[in-house]
View 1 (spheres, rainbow, N blue to C red):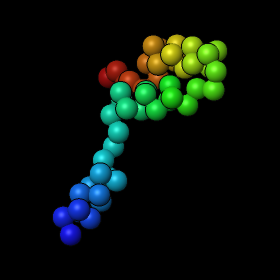
View 2: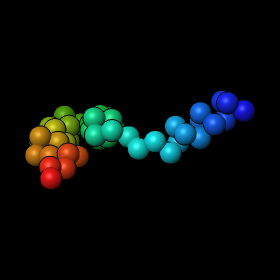
View 3: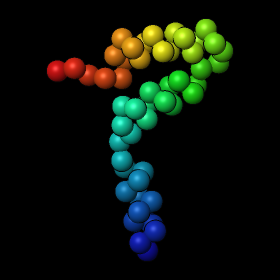
Length: 50
């Protein structure tokens, strides 16, 4: 029962900005795509500045 509740709460958790950035970089197909994604992250793609 406790394991089911723990799994449910993990499914509802929102990933952090760092986790989203890492997942985005891991999806790169080649070096050019990776560099493009790195530039997008450096420009603040996943970070909101208010």
